[in-house]
Length: 97
Image 1 (tube, rainbow, N blue to C red):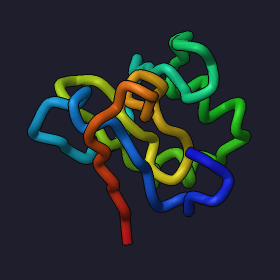
Image 2: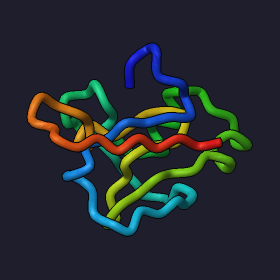
Image 3: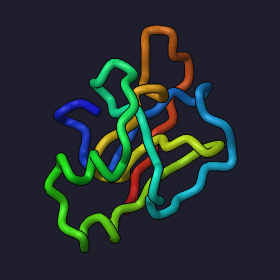
């Protein structure tokens, strides 16, 4: 997500996702590949710790997922595997109100 994209919005490569998409809370053991980390996996719990999130913030954070893969820690960080590239032909914009 670029600096000019609001925190409540994510743009992803439509062809990389599988439907249905669902929104859920994080679970122990969840991991994702944070955008900008060149595909390296990181546990969601470690991401929360690095972001210095309070327990309340962690409990109130939602994940957008597809086929057991996290697409976006909503309002925080997208997953690198679903990013838009030069090969992207269809873009899905998801905005949370």
